[in-house]
Amino acid sequence: MAAMTIDKLVPGLALLRDYKRDWLSADLVAGLSVAAVALPIGIAYAQLAGFPPVVGIYSCILPPIAYALFGSSRQLIVNPDAAACAIVASTVAPLAAGDPARYLDLAIALTAISGVLCIAGGFAGLGVIANFLSRPILTGYLNGIALSIIVGQLGKLLGFDVASGGFFRTLAAVVSRLDQTHIGTTAVGTSLLILLFAFRSFFPRLPGPLIAAVIGTVMVYILGLSNQGVAIVGSVPAGFPLPRIPSVGYGDLTPLVLGASGIVLVSFCSMMTTARGFAAKNGYTIDANRDMTALGICDLASALNRGFVVSGADSRTAVADSSGGKSQMTGIIASIAMACVLLFLTSPLAYLPITALAAILISSASGLFDIASVHRYYKLSKPEFLQCLIATFGVMTIGVLPGVLIAVALAIMNLLRKGSRPHDVELGLIEGKNHIYASAEEGGKIVPGLIIYRFDGPILFFNADYLKARVSSLINEASTKTRYFLFNAEACPGLDVTGVDALESIQKDLAENGITFGIARAKGVFRATVELSGIAEEIGSENFFPTIHAGVHRFLISSEAKGGSGQSVVSVAN
Image 1 (tube, rainbow, N blue to C red):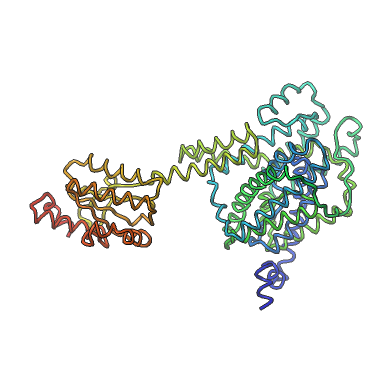
Image 2 (cartoon, rainbow, N blue to C red; image 1 turned 90 degrees about the horizontal axis):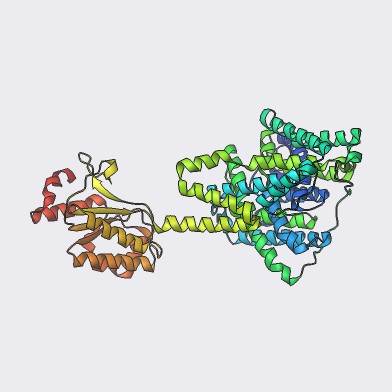
């Protein structure tokens, strides 16, 4: 019993008990491959987030171990992420006001708050937020992040510092200072950037970032480039840091919580996109709530080790998968390798050129930019294409965190827009095919005097008026006088109080105009709510039908009895 309880709290322990020895060689190769890519990227992302290089290594050690113990993906590698790093910098930098110690405290607090929010969300079952940001909006947000990172690194690539001030301001500042370009720095940076693009295009299985970092370091050391004005990382302290309790004032809590909320939304949605993609490829499923809790524990582990927020790292996860990693042990091995670097191999890192880190960041950011999906959105859905562009320009113009809020607002507006005007259709009878009803475009023939109407969504407060307007429009536009209105409720899963009032109003208006109101295929919550509200009695039990055909047949028989226009299709409907 105790073992079952522990397994439920720490699911990864079952991995250790059931681990197959023949997986070890594959996981070992994959883990070392991940470490080879994660080391230079972690250092580069530390620079992006505003930290000393060593903090990037700190952030790569404990989180993958925590995820291996608590997460549900076998391939996912949890490491620093470009989007989360950008939010960290935009949240913490204004509060720190240039004080490095305060910057560190605020970042640790931000990471811990993000972890607590994720854990609380996981236990509360909020893993569904992984579906909250539509793919076009998330693509637009990441495209904006990618462009902002690329422009933000151009100064370092060229050998001068440019203050961050949004995409267009930063770009203008870079252009205005082109006369300050350092030739040696630019030569090293651009050559490494070209090398990274070449590796990604022609040798994707090779650890391009590590090779570029090694080449850059060797060039600086052998050619003495640091004495010629090429900026380098400098001394990197060896060993593990002691945990630090951050000193944060009450006035900092509100912006930190807001920043953490944005980080949770973006990093978790991004992580689940990566995790689900690789899970589908390898034939298993992901537990979103469990992974949300796991991400929170990873953030707390990173904060304990003086690191910053992490997420599912798509590039490093791809390395783990393509290298043949079989289980979460890949992440554990990568963490051990990173720890060994931190303990024994930090000296060479001092010669790593800053321009090499800029090249790594530009290469990584370019991988985030997804122009193919933008083109696809343009072809499939102009509104979603527009939402994608708005999210992109929001990040580029007003900043990363406001860009998150814009993305959230767009998602809500998109849901309300679709929910307020659900798809609906007037159905007709397909001649020669008994019991089959379809739209006019699909060959359905409208029965004179009868309207068969399907509303594809729940009837709620924000679409009830739209339903009433559509019913009125159909009756007014009918070529013959309507005598029967049959509501097909099969695609209507439920209704609220406002929806009940809307149905009651429709029934009364139709009755006043001599039109009978019937409902077909009412079921579940919709049927129960209609009966509980008393509308069913007003409509009459004789006007509720198990199928559309039963309702149509009732109308046609009634029309025949009255000598109406339904006689011509009675034989078809029977």
